[in-house]
Image (tube, rainbow, N blue to C red; front, side):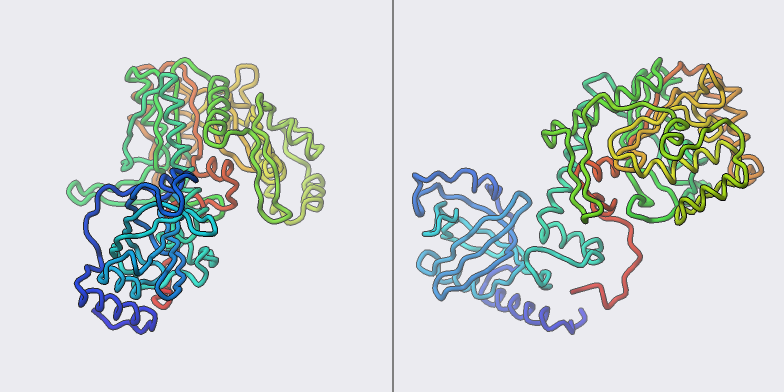
Length: 500
């Protein structure tokens, strides 16, 4: 072991050694019958008096310590909240009282004693026994209320979780949201399944994959970018309603709304359509919001410029992409390329948007929507009739094949869920695949096995995707995807920044 040059760590190591000299294991032992701090705090009743409550045993991390001679007050914290502990020399054995003088912020302890209150009315455990559970060798953040350096917070989430109670709350809300989604879908007859994360071909979305290699088979593989093609194989196999809450990987940029590893819900329903999927996701998000938060009014409190309210009250608007572009820009889409003068006018009017308008008409419409319209859609909006050329896995609209039978659900200025009437014609699907691959066929192969599956017959179906990370961001008011992911991907830090 190398000697630490951190004087705070050196001091704490000396205290750890002293604990051992006194016969205390600085890394604790198994402890039974612990009660969560929130449960203890909620159980106090005024008739219990100063220290007449039940004897309780609890464990937590010290986040505040006040020494007053022969009496010390600690605030310690577990995943459920904070509670005060009184360490009175008269109540503790000499051995346990020696531990008190060797405690630091960040240490984890176990206490047992009657529940009561202080003279100021603070619910308190009056400790009769004290043991050390884990001696912290590194000090907590400068302010015990929590980390303030965002970079350190993301890198050291293990500190962030206990130093910032709001972070623990957000992560637990994420867990609860996913549980509610599972409950909702299972109650409606959907079966949860698992599909491969390692794939010989990547498909189901347009994205750059991560590549890996299986040594035993000498086989190049990809981390999946989407589970769609395997879930559709299950429809061919006879499943009627399936869903997967899955990890996807896309070898692309990192931003407040993108992480290379992310969580997605995908669900498919035989004999459904984009409309049944829109109904499903609308009801699901509203049900989750009510069950978890008790409201359909979501408040985002960022900076003054980013404060906004999101109203999830049903029904949600359904409107075509072309109509939205016309409403917001005055441009009437007629399936023709924009004139050069019109392109120049739009770019001048919307400087700073980096508009790429030199492509085909469908690409121009999509670009105008994504850059000028989507960021303004705060309340839920189902954007329908998207150009079919950009969605090769969806059916075309019967009344106008230029557009696809789909929705893109936008909330809080970003797409949160796409939904399709799924394409099940194997010949059309093959044509779409080969058009999508085009000259890249040497690098990106067509999934011939999926086409074979379609030839056996897939029923007409509706399918949807839902970005779990973005949903949690929207419901909790988080401004960055890193705030709702336990361990976001970060560039490795320099050795000098690896500790406090």
